[in-house]
Image: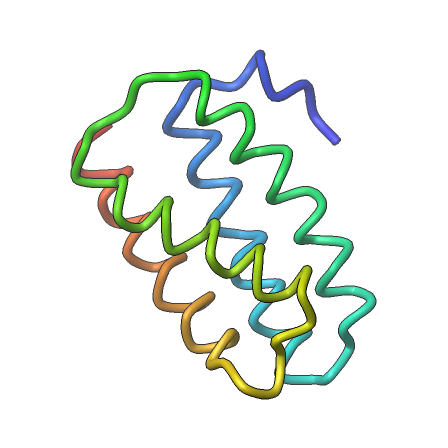
Length: 101
């Protein structure tokens, strides 16, 4: 994994959106081991992001991303719409990061 401290906030968030897409795809494929691998990476990105200031318009989607991480970690995979939430959060974060950062 890249040194997260070396990324600017926009790049960090855009990398997060890639992992959200991967998580969504692996959950749809019922490949939960791979989904968890990318949740590990996403969690590291979130920890770095939490140390930074960023536009408050992104915060609801960062919180939604944290919820996705929790649901995958707690294996709430069948009862939640993790794939949909992952794709939606990724697209919105991507568009807002491009517009606001």
